[in-house]
Length: 64
Ligand SMILES: [Zn+2]
Ligand SMILES: [Zn+2]
Image (cartoon, rainbow, N blue to C red; front, side, top):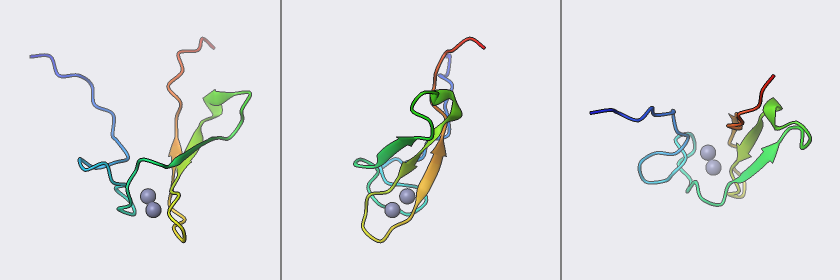
């Protein structure tokens, strides 16, 4: 069997954030530079009072 390569995911098997435990669904993805997604971005939790965020690499297949 060929196992697909698993990236470490930010959400657990229930779809909740591994860090704060809030539902992962309506999180906001923010790019640091809208003109250059290769710089990455972050996912922010939208739950009020929660300042949890995760840095994020956009999966772009860009040539250098
Ligand atoms: Zn979180
Ligand atoms: Zn949260």
